[in-house]
Amino acid sequence: MITLTVNDTAYELDLDPRTSLLDALRDHLALTGTKKGCDHGQCGACTVLVNSRRINSCLTLAVMHEGDAVTTIEGVGTPEALHPMQASFLDHDGFQCGYCTPGQIISALGMLDEFRSGWPSHVSESLEGEPELSNEEISERMSGNICRCSAYPNIVDAIRRARD
Ligand code: FES
Image (cartoon, rainbow, N blue to C red; front, side, top):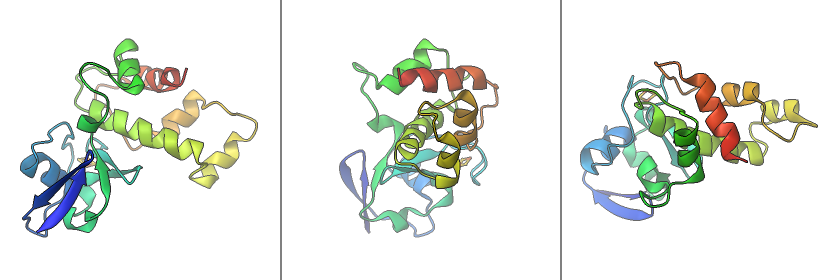
């Protein structure tokens, strides 16, 4: 039995210890906003925040996250009041089919947190004298999230403008 805290709610789960965090979210908690694309760390569709850091939830076991704070797309904004990042994806057509969108939005939020905290440093060093994120840097920092529709220009635009 493990306690998994997701979107500020603690859940007691009796899981096979081999259950990935992604499968725990989708199959045991019915939080299906987090998508399964490749199931082996290549597409980013399964991105969630764990203690404010973005991770591929398909690559980690749920039992490793006892005591961690997991945030999924269901924990971002509300239907009545979208998070500014969600609103920006809508306003700037940051999607086509939408399958990758939850992962893109969660990843964008994690990426902006990393940017503000100067992490990872090898990327931040290139930002000296450049307080705003360039399109190129957004693209690089979001390179773990694949969009099969190739909506990349609008995704980058949505992320950049969400900061306005
Ligand atoms: Fe996890 Fe593709 S489903 S990276």
